[in-house]
Length: 296
Image 1 (cartoon, rainbow, N blue to C red):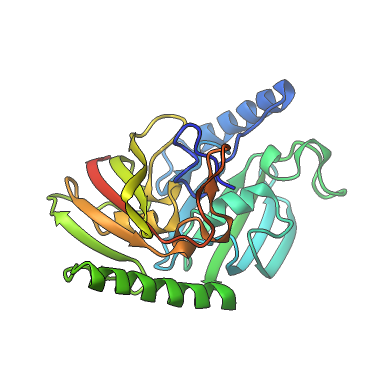
Image 2: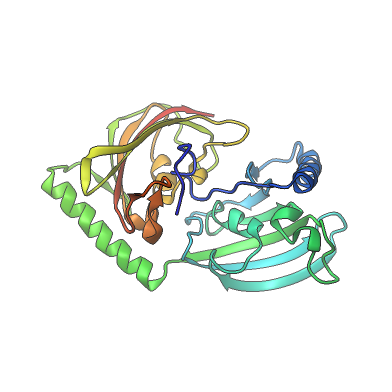
């Protein structure tokens, strides 16, 4: 389950503690510094600060990033980063729960379907010190040219989304909330205070204030947080759960809104816990009241 002890992993789509052993940390820092130096001045680079995975996006897709139980379809060419030797290529369908290198799990949870990109992955998030056979020695940075064709909901996800969307619509009707916008993804939202200026986009860094409630208990705030970008946490739409990813891109600077999020775009069948008991039950629809304070 997703932890909330620091109010950080509670709302992001994935939480990685990063390198733990001193030798791992030293190697990881060295590789990230190499990658950062090589990419200095390169445009369209998106980085995940927790893992050091970088994505050079040549085409930004219009779909949604992969979620835990989606089936993803990807064409790829894999190379060793430093000498550009190809070690694998082809097409693959997979789930983020499959036995993948961690760098792929990071990238495809933050890259919208339909995108084309180069992924550059530090060895710790690839095959580490052990490598993989003769073609990938230990401590090898990898790069992949990828075409992310689509992310498809499983039958159970699609069914759950339909049930949840109906439950949210019934809630809105019962509450007399007639101005909710019904997004095609299943998200419902009300902009209570329109903002001005630019809309947030996938990789903008945002300062936010938000409160989370359960749809089934809308009088009780589970948690209220303020988040701003830092070196460790970029606070972009892609760093949050899917419902926030979708909803934040509907909002201008200064906007306040209420997001009504189906469980599959929240915490799904896993729910979320603070370590002292379940805080958000499995398959719970949630409400997020959010204010976009700043957009970088």
